Length: 359
Image 1: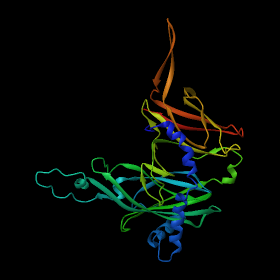
Image 2 (image 1 turned 90 degrees about the vertical axis):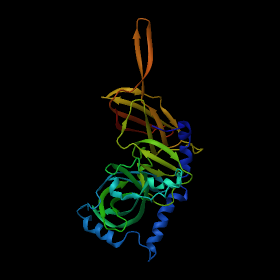
Image 3 (image 1 turned 135 degrees about the horizontal axis):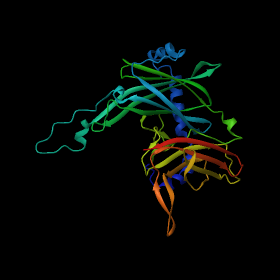
């Protein structure tokens, strides 16, 4: 994992948490709601909405552009949840094409970095998301319509057209059960690929008297941005939340010597009279049900947890001269990370686990 300056990242969780009530995430919703109310502005074209309606009852996908919705993640955003939709699609199906032709090479001169722009590929496609609240088991009225332009660049040297990759798009939503109709479309809507995905977001009031977490997942890298995104944006292999760009480890596979990077939020923890939290998280790595790696419990003053756990175990070595210990990388195999989360102020606790593999 590439979580540079781990201590700074952990301390910064409080800063990130303070920004969750900033207008940036709410601005995404406000802008598209405003557009929807303006008669001349269309969020989702009628041509796409018609395709949604045709397949909604049976959840029949349209395979013009094949893709799969993998899962959703969610994080607190004021009274809403910033909801991230992760989907897999082949790179070539997003319409990557040369960004532009390189200018003619000047006499006896090498091209500058600017002049080699033709080494870039660009994908220009459309992503449309329609969220219907599910009522009595059936999709009700449209709750939100979202347009996300797919405008991504890739170096020709690293571009793999046949590779299926993880992409993301996020948007703030209220609690409830949803049916997402998602479409990936070519530039002029000649191709419209669709998928349907049901998911739910918890009721915040139900989380007040117990501990619960957002989905726990592994990250490869985290970087701070100058400011939070104010418009829904598509990302490759990562997503953004507040002022962070977070690169996912979706296959949960690590090389020997790497670290587990965790990112999650704890609901239901109670602050003290000074607004400070006192949360303890115990981490155990299990292999075949037995403890393989032990860590000292983590102590946190914020419910937003950003933690790095090195996959290094301590081995006791006995010899005629006595006992010594040695640090070793975790050997290849399948493991489970077990977490016990305790709010030291209220006394409430909850246990979680997530599987991963070293190879």
